[in-house]
Image: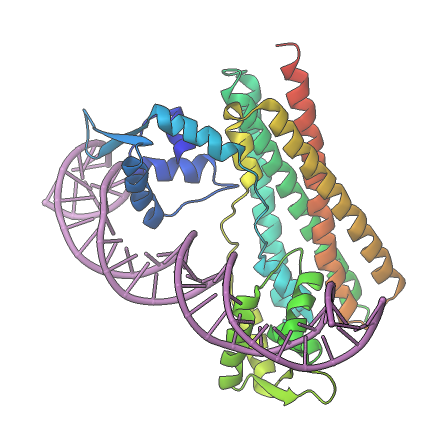
Length: 172
Length: 172
DNA sequence: AACGACATGTAAATTGTTACATGATTTG
DNA sequence: CAAATCATGTAACAATTTACATGTCGTT
């Protein structure tokens, strides 16, 4: 949230839509968290609330202390969260699942991955056409490439998995 | 948990180590959940507790009702959990992070991905040498391939990201 | 005898989701 | 003027983590 507000002041509502649209492929926040969290950040003096000059709602902007805190937070060490992939769980215990159902799920995963790929390619072309502010666009391109690599890997895997299941399913 | 117990009866402790070691790259459970969950499953008659003939602890085995429930659960529709990637978050807001720190994190991500790749390759060779029971090994191979594709994608991305940062960092 | 691995559980705290309640503003 | 979107918040619930407390067994 501090990161998003460091780009531009915005309402809690827009904060959420920006997080969904821009960070959506690697981050999320739900409404239930945003408003309480904004109130907390305000208490700590990391963000401030301006009455919006036009339109309804509160415009939140990041303060100088908020920027310092953002840098602190981003500099903190981290660990990858433990994974939970419901599709892979179903594949692993695949002999307890009807083969058609499994194939449908894989086909769906493939379609989703391909759609994601196409979307990333479009965004990539956009960013690469506009060299953008040296700071802003470069890092966004990197996260986008991560999404692209990941989506391609998922698509490749889904194809391979379907082939392997079909190949050994019919003869045996 | 029902899935793991469908392979073999085991103690709660071993259930946990099996989940870490065998499903670790796409699933996890913590101790705090396992014992209460086992008690719940026992109340519902989905697992039963045998006093272990040798050694300490309780051996839990899945019941017939438990197997039915497992199939039901695996047949349920699912949705991919919302992602949270702390590295990508730091990359996205990369202009608030010291360049060296960012490069270190990327190098670490690359090393981890390469290690993971190597581990998957070894396991893959093992599984492919032993055609195994037709049911058991095939699905395990599929989840393993998912891990391999994912790890490769992560490694490729990390390399590309480091190149892009170095390439534009020095001249500008 | 000490240590590490095996084993079982509980309690507190944190975290996050979901649903609900409400209302303003814009657009067709 | 109806519907969709923008907007703010709370409350209940669910899920999960972490720390704690305790004890056994096999090995060195």
